[in-house]
Length: 261
Image 1: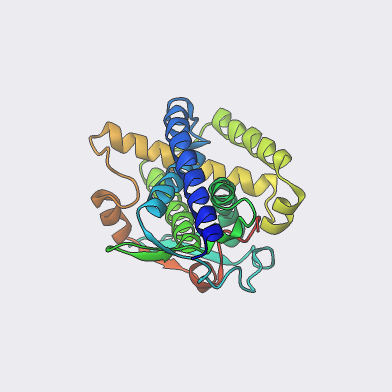
Image 2: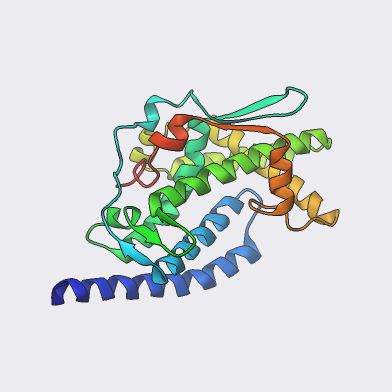
């Protein structure tokens, strides 16, 4: 490695370390003031803070990723991204168009880390392959797993909420619609075109997200506080459903290249 390349590498790591410390504070503050509708952004900040720390403690090989590929999300919005089928045959799905909400949120937050890592070429961050003794994966793949996991979680808990007799009242639905309108107005032209998101879709996803969070809060009140993705309770509950993820979502989609890069 040349002296210039080494200097740049160290500068990128310093930038990433600085952003990680900053986000530690911002995530804690967000946790104190977050709304139910804004909960996903808080979770994604936590995910990318973890990724930043992972980068600092991992061996890194750059530019081994296949990059964005040929998959264009806006051409597949009506297709099913993932589905859950209960033992009684009840089935619910999330479309690629609805999944775009989660993609947009994680790409926005990930882009902050990417620009800290390499301001001259933010896409380089998403192409990193991170390796530890436990796992090896590209940042883009790790981000996609997060998108799919949390979309699936919201679908699962919204179904469970319905079984438990939980629903949103008119005021809560109105709040979701207002939040959806605000988000859509703040979206760039590229974000709108690449995701196909509109106010109606945003509202529907936010309502599902809010219902999911209500179910999680009820579980916590019932003595099951550890109920998020990866917990023993969550894994067992998900196992009682037949879960399917489409090839488009699992393989062809490249998170980090839909609304950015």
